[in-house]
Structure formats: C-alpha cells, structure tokens
Image 1: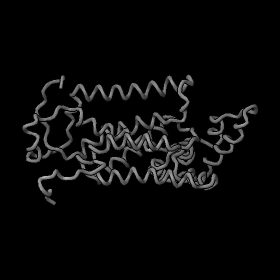
Image 2 (image 1 turned 90 degrees about the vertical axis):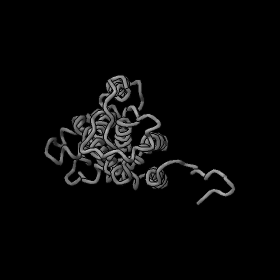
Image 3 (image 1 turned 45 degrees about the vertical axis):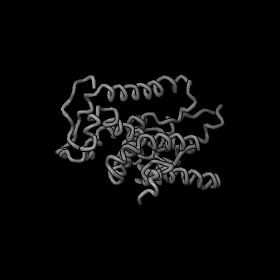
Image 4 (image 1 turned 90 degrees about the horizontal axis):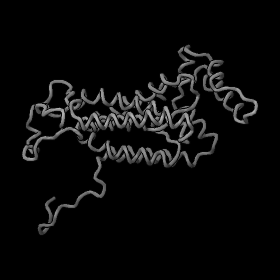
Length: 276
C-alpha cells in the first residue's frame, strides 16, 4: 500500500520475523500453562518431556540404577537424600528413556526469569539468522542444536538424574550462527544493494574463522561458560548449580559447525586479512 500524502510507511511495532515471534510466544505460553498445573501434573510433565542423562545411560546399559543411586549419594542426615534416591531409581526404571526428550526439553523452563532470558537472547540472535536463512532452515538449526546440547550434557554427566530443561542450547546455537556473519566484515555500503546478484556458494563458507571479531566473541563466550561451570558452580559462588553449561557449549559447537552448511548466502568476498 502506498503512503497517503507522502507519509512514511508504518513500521511494525516489533521488528522480528513472524515465525520467531510465534516460537518465543509459545515458550511463554507453555510456561504460563505450567504455572496453572498442580504439582503432580507438572511433575509428570517434567518426567515425560525433560532430558535426563541417567535415563539414557541406563537404557543403553552404560550404567545400572545402583550406579546412578551411588552417584546421587545416600546421606541419612540429609532430609532430601531419600527423595533423591527414590527419584534416581524412578528415572532409571525400564522404559523411562523417551526419544522425544532430546527435543522436548527445550520448550520447558524452570522459571519466568529463565524463559524471559532465553526469549530475549533468542530474539536478539535469532532475528538475523531467520532473516538470512529462512524459517525452515532455522527450525533445523534449532532442533540440531537442542540435540547437540542434550548430547553434550549426557557425555559430561552420564549419571545425572537431574532433569534438564530450557532452550539455552538452541539459543547458544543461534548465537554461533549469527556470529559467523554479523561480526564478519561486510561489503562496502555502496555494494550492499547488489548482494542478491552475487553467485551463491557451492559449499560451506568457513571464512568467518579468519575474522578476529568472530574469534574474539567465541573465545569470550567459551571462557565465560567454562569459568562459570568449572569455578563458580563448584565453589558455590553461583547459586544456579543446576545450569547445564555443558549443554550451552554443545549447542554452540553444533550451531557453529552446522550453520555454514545451511547458510545459502552469497559467495564470500576475498579475505582482507586477519584484522577484519
């Protein structure tokens, strides 16, 4: 529609791809539904949809229920010990490893703060990714990074009976995907309008690994997660000991490795040196 009397066209209040906006809205809606559920129903939902490493270790025969209980620890002086032992026995029972949990855990969150933080970061980094590769490829990226996050958490802590939930692994994957092009040197502004005329790439483009800004972002991100996981949590500095920082790393690594294969962007410019 043309503007009337030379008025500027009306811009959207929320400048975000519709599909991404719907996805974030669904995360908030699911959290809202859970807040209305009674404790027993919500616990059943958590068991059915969360990713529990120990369940898969027991299902594949890589650990026995007794080993998982031993990892949880029995402590007569701890009033929560009996519950943790019973929980470990329950989640390692036969048939408790549900295949859909490799994805479904990502739509559940532990609190409104948890879902809000993931929603903000997903909006910030998901928007440029969705605009670049489209909704379908972004959905593939989200699923792959969720699986990557679950796999990393399982490898890092195979005897953990603690349910893992949250979209943080996928958010980390979108951060990695966005970093491959938003921090890299762009064409001069005079050529930006002609990007759609450039030939498409014949294969994945790894030239972003030569950009110092990209490598700096990734280094700071990795350092932050490692410091949090290896120092802050063990020392009790951070109360969020349940944060699955290994899953964050798994999601980022998968996003970094997968995105060049699904990015249909134009052929890269000749590199301009490491200082780009």
